[in-house]
Amino acid sequence: MDDKSIVELYWQRSEQAITETAAKYEKYCYSIAHSILNNNEDAEESVNDTYNEAWDTIPPHRPSILSTFLGKITRRLSIDKFRHRNAAKRGGGEMPLVLDELQDCIASDKNIEQEYEKKRLSEVVNAFVISLPEIEQKVFLCRYWYMDSIEVICKQFEFSESKVKSMLYRTREKLRDMLVKEGFQ
Amino acid sequence: MTNYAILEALNNVDDECVKNAKTTTIKTPGKFKTSGLRWGAMVACFCLLLVVSIMAVYQIQNGADPNGPTIPPVTNNTSDSQLSVEQGICVGGKLYMPDTELSEKATKENIGVVVGPVSFDNKTTLDVYAYEYLPNDGKTSRVIVPVKDSFYVYSFYSYMPNDNENWIIDLLSQAAYVEIRDVNYYGTATVYSKISDNELDAIIEFLSLLGEPHTRNENELDQYYFDKFKNQFKEGEIWISEDGGISLGGNQTVINKFDDLVNGESRIIVVVMEDSTYLTYHYFEGAGVIRLEDFGYGYILTEEQIEKINHLIDLI
Image (tube, helix red, strand yellow):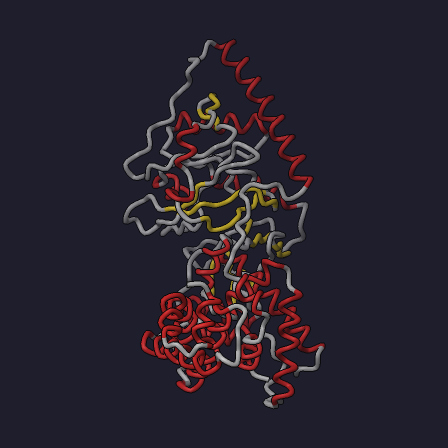
């Protein structure tokens, strides 16, 4: 079933919407959740929560890209779950590595929990991502949005491991510079 | 700001970007990246033509077997994959042109996954196909490279010999096929299905016609690179490869060299990174030159070795 029809089912409040969503996007959502949580049960729970949240938010939303809409929910829920679980820093999965790498971009631990700053940060990060050349953008998002392992990224792009790491490093440096320039300390 | 904040901020990235990230446009293998490379390829072709002509004349004049030696069959150790050489390979004085059928076999499907480009002389010309063909020897990752701009091929990607000192010999004795490598350290010959000494000699002879470094003697090769680099760099200088720098670990990198740490080998470099520690080999003893290559790393060190390295770093 195409995405438009699935969204229409949500708007009609048909439970078939969940079934169709699961049939089409369960694997996609699960892969995002599992990359973050590295745990089957937690990942499955996140995916189920995703369906629930999709049910609660459509309507009023009418997502133009259903996959990304669901992926974002899964990602957010999984990150929340990860934080809640507060796993050991080196507890496995890609999350600890991703967090470590993003640490490069942070000048200090001070400040910013306010909504305004969060929103501004989102805008800056979004602008940054959009400004990246195509390949760098894709690699960056695969790593930090989808939390793909370096190995998976290498396979997807047919790059060597060192090339991917090198590219990510440079991109993080750029992000760091931009964040500093924008006053995020 | 925390790193979580960035992760969360990423959640609001443009939907199209997120969606497109998973749709990859695979690069076309072997495309020329620079006009310089194009010229280089033309020169290479010309040289090849010239050498082939010389060899043909030589063979006619000396009454050599017109068929030349045959390439030995692929051994049981190998997969069915054969070499894909677009412009032929010279063995025993005979130039073997690519066999279409065999070339077709050497595809991603039956060789393995393309793991990245390999660079000769800092120019990306080839694609590296990783595949496994040596069973149960613990050194399974090899590559085969369809050559686009010359008859050179390259094997040996993440080969990790057990014996540092004799690693070339180790490689030669176990390789299913030794192939010719472009100007590079250890740039002599490599094998695909083990070739005879006579054939290897013929390759070396062929290389000599091209003016390529050619020797089976490691010391001679070291001397070659010593000569090559001694005037190019200052003593103690670290030469960082142009193709990617030394961003091996993605994090801040500390480089140190140390002598006599492993098996008394003094031409070993330690690359210590914040997130891992690797060894690589490219130190030309006496030349004061360290060559670091982005794609090459060898052993993961033991705790004891790391401790020793850290001690050395402290001293510095």
